Length: 124
Image (cartoon, rainbow, N blue to C red; front, side):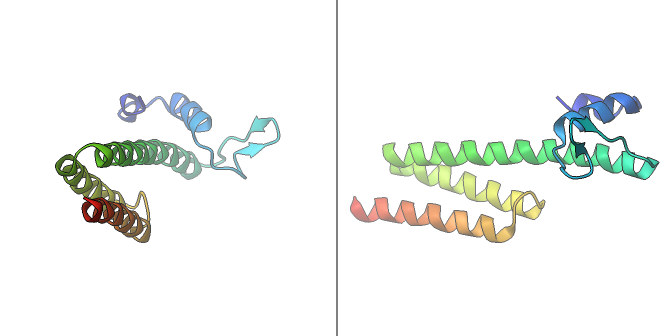
């Protein structure tokens, strides 16, 4: 949705989207109104923060979807679960590499998902 606005110069529209989507707290939200940026650089930071927040939200949503599909595959078929584990491990590494999630979090999730796979393999 936001990608359509990236190439345009309509600053007011982008700032409006930034104010709606960016839950940056503190400086933006003061009571019932939002404060506007005072400088061009603050305006640019607000736009960039909103754009990055939407991109990060998309990646995190995809990670949750992949994890859910892995857990569903774990209950059904071992080979399908192995394939799902490889895809979610790759996605976690990419998310950590781009800074969406911390590398320790990615490592921890991969470890815990692998432990579940090993438990299923041991039980079978």
